[in-house]
Image (cartoon, rainbow, N blue to C red; front, top):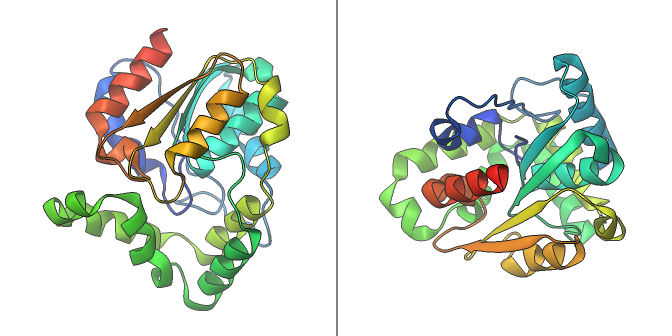
Length: 234
């Protein structure tokens, strides 16, 4: 399970009870959580190779991969470049190309200058719907703190991976069974982005979760968990 930009492995906690006795491997992408924070600009290939190195270290030859946003981008890279390692894909709230590039360069510059706290409120406002935020202020504070705790160097480095992103040529070659999940109210990667991915990956299907913004797996965990289990058991 691969986290989004500005999150850490704790973003998947709402999924753990549903996954029960299954072996679950969660990790924080480079530059996030307690993972190493290399300086400089990251590429999606760096993030993908990190995932492969982790699987190698754990002795896992092949696994289902679940990712959200940047994590979904990494998951698609894995399925395209190391298909023998990917059993199936569950892609939440992600995109094969998320422009304009200048916007990501600007966000990286903002974070380098003012830290991740400078963008935390704006990020979380896109992660959950206004209704969820009003009803769950404690959870919103926790999400904000998670973003603000992300190292600025790591966040900015990961912005560069999204800035350079264009997975569209890779999608038709993905052979892993794929479920694409979009949040109906996601302003960051709207359902049209998920629909484009599902249309390009042979045999993929799209599900749109009502009442969910960008962090659909968190905001609408019961619906997300049902879809994950259906995909894993299908």
